[in-house]
Image (cartoon, rainbow over all chains, first blue to last red; front, side, top):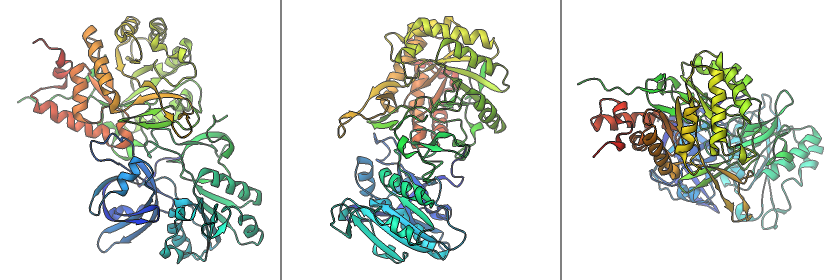
Length: 280
Length: 310
């Protein structure tokens, strides 16, 4: 049984900037020295709606990237937010200087290879956000980083120009062909594996995409670390709403919490065909 | 001026403060200890434990609603033996006071759970959850049936003997909560936990089907606070000597004060913890301040104060 991220703290963060990028908002928050403990894959849980809001639950967002200026005691964290529901719309409307109640960092992080390796990073929609921070870390460890991003249509691709600097190659796939290649992110994976260009796969995006990648990775016996997505009420492991059927170390299938045992999980252990069903 | 007395009692059990976690909203306490020392609150009320390990319900298990949420967890848990081997020792090592919540599938199972708890040192009280709305068979919500409620509590009381206080958690989804309360008090309950969640449903307008995999779920959060206040008021009026652990939508000291005025001797903070991990501590500090500013010398003076004569 795993435990809550031991670095988690409830803090007040300040909005440093809030920019619209395509269909998404890029929020930069100052979280001070807490940033030192944030790792690629970790997420944050933010209160939305203000003090008297009827929106009583926190919203969870993957940390996209962090930067740290120890000389000033400043640490900033970037989030990519899609203004879909009332909570995320409220967050996207927060001006520079606004204060936010944030619990950070939460959850597991992507494992970083100890030796330089060839890493394939795959993102769906704004699920690409945490992959850019991961790419920077992998690059700094001497890894080769290839990235594949996909979405239903061009405006749902999140691929900032500065992010492209930290990858060796970037391929884009859209289901309507409005950007990059017509097709799905999973299309090129088998041939990349065949060519010996993939030692490890990292992914973040919709569950169906993660399941499809797991299927390919399992067949080729390639390690697949995926950041899962389940709706959660608390983010800190107490509400039990964000569970997934996952094979644990004893070979038993257990309903694990994606906020504590995830979001980064070993794709080969997640029982993708059982998600949304009762664990047996 | 005498020192303010914030302590409370639930039957024979004494607690230094009247603030508790709510069962099912704090897991077994470990996660919250990241945010505050568990010994600083009255007690941790653990998530209802059953005899065997249970995977719970499939997802989606949650839906946010106006000032509230629906949950349909289905009592996921490790089973009583693992719980007693891992969770209780951890809590006691960390000097937390513990109220163990139990849930059975039938009358006998409650007694078996009670037998397993009888020999465990250090438990402050047992909360008998007869009102979880997320069981397969709604007919098994014992708290909707005066006779079944009475039988469960009678079995637990006989098994536990007189040493460990028993709190019985009731559902507000009944015609007359006072009648249900009467039954379990007669059967030997030391106190009552009021209220469990209210059965609700959300239909997803995109899929045009019930949103939760379990279709129905328990409504919690500020939306149900007036229901909690009403239930506590009615039961306290009928049984002023029976201590009540109140819960339902409390997220501030002001809310907790309202439940105390209605007749609660202790207050559990549940759903508010999901949005604020420090909620129990915050509510505790705010309630102490409010009571003192209103001129009360103790928590006990304020319990049921809304019932006073003109």
